[in-house]
Length: 50
Image: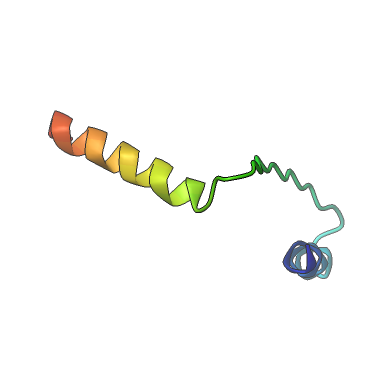
């Protein structure tokens, strides 16, 4: 959360208003889930030829 606080502070220094949305899906036994999702999308696109 420290990086989130620092990012907000950096924006606050330049803007009168900061909007932040933070979403996390944390489940036991799942590690590096975002990487596997990206790999799945890339594999799907490669199969389609996009």
